[in-house]
Image (cartoon, rainbow, N blue to C red; front, side, top):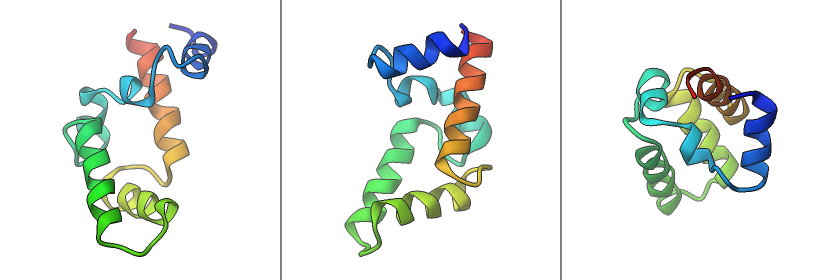
Amino acid sequence: MKKNDLYEKLANEELGIEDIMTNTFMEEYTNFSSFKSFVEELEERGSRSKAGTEKILQDVITEKTTFKNFEKMKERAIEDYCKYN
């Protein structure tokens, strides 16, 4: 799939971020087995922290992934999705 086509599908909500962050992607680049477990970690931290959502997201990404921020993680997910689909 071409990047432009994927961006269009994401914009039209034909695909969600959870669709491009496949289990294979999550296992390769993060300490999570799925996007669902990533979200669960964010929710769990959010329920016990007064930090804002962005801070929690940034902390989880730097602690438990190979990325510097969510944008870099999303870019890599898009590249991988296009390569394999």
